[in-house]
Image (cartoon, rainbow, N blue to C red; front, top):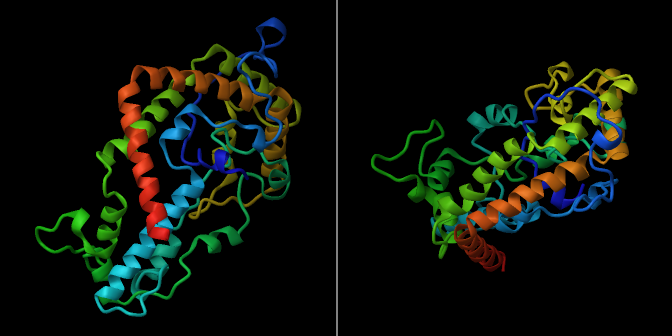
Length: 310
């Protein structure tokens, strides 16, 4: 799975219901049409214009690693000399936290696209992935938890304390944001605008036709009719568990395979990408100064991450 597709993991496309199957001159833009990339594999998905204004998946991982490392150093200075870099919650709350771990990352903003994965795991994921995401260090003591977060494990905080000042975790976060002019704007401006643009793209005529063509293709392969690829990915019939995984039934796997095959056959992601990229470029032009400020702050953050990781 490429980093550029995982970077859309939290972006859920809310597409409008479409009717008709669209074909010929009235069908979706063909592969190779002006501005429409031909997407046969995940690696074929180009970066989106807004990607330069936010951390990608690998950078987000480095941010988390840097935050944990700085927090660990802080804890050691406080006297917790054997504090782990990636600790589990205190034993009293570890089982609850593990139970609450939900994996919601999407391979692309239109759901499944890896055919081999679809054939094996449907719309779910390999069970060992959950274990790989859990903390690797020992469980914290109650005293360590209080020092790390400035609160007890039941959520009680010192009277009058600010969240940014709570414990070593808050201090580490502040250190990574040193020099960032407006962290709230940096985190929320691109994300909020992207969410709005994701909603707007559903009104694009070519996208509606692309989804209609994809939907008919899935039906022709034996699946039920879905309004759009995300409706297929999130269908309640897959019975996702508390952790977000599915049981990978025969029907689910067959639908996921048809879903991926139809996206590839009709270049669904290419058409969707072109429509979204057009809207993102226009939004960047409309808010040029703000996006420039956001990008400057992101570059400061990247520098702080590099410095923290040495």
